[in-house]
Amino acid sequence: MQRLLSELPQFFITAPHECPYLENRKERKLFTTLDSLNSISLNNTLSKQGFRRSQNVLYRPACTDCNACLSARIVINNFKVSKSQKRLQKKNVTINRIIVRPFAKKDHYALFQRYVQVRHKTGGMSDMSFYEFSSMVEDSKVSTKLIEYRDANSVLLGVCLTDVLDDGVSMVYSFFDPRLKTNSLGTYMILDHINYANELNLKYVYLGYWVQGSNKMQYKSSFSGLEVFISQAWKTLTKEPMCTNLNELLAEETISKQVSNIKILDY
Image (cartoon, rainbow, N blue to C red; front, top):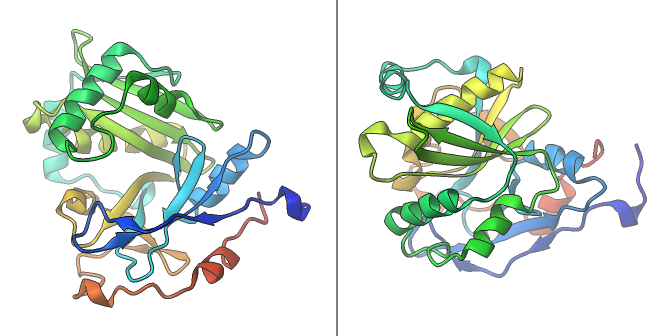
């Protein structure tokens, strides 16, 4: 379907700022906003091209001297659960998945605060108010679910804000009780989202970003069937490093070229 130029999304670029994953690097993002009329179709279309959602903004990295930060997804049909992942599922067998509408509650916020104070104390979310947290959870113009993970006594252990796309589920933001280290709740929630996508007959679980050289992101590479979006295509992530030197990961395209390569014909 053809659209008027005024109906097409406009793209913007952020100013450079410190990279949260790699030292001595600057980060920039290419982004667009979701409108109320075509937000679901735009989210579906751009998620397939490496974009992520944060409230009503879709974005992906557009750094000038590095492309180490890559969108990642699990191909459900190519995923095979490992022995350690099977043990983890057995260990957490009493955890219940509860799908509710995206509405922030006090126990969600308390768990979020506990999580960021341990895992991201120096990040921008550490002083987030309940009002700001509520906006993060509730401000969505797409098909969004809030997935709770509770134990047999209904104690909240983890939360994931999840978008249901036309080809998969996207884990927008997740957090969990950092005191339960042996339960590996972050990994467990990904495993459960693979099951959730299967139940919905969807093909992918979108994980956000995988960053070569970042210890924070290495756990994602433990999942088989992982793909990353690079050079305008999804490619299987192998055990071999994609580049032996991060300095060689230079951005191949200008911003204008990146925008011109975005496909929005089905939007």
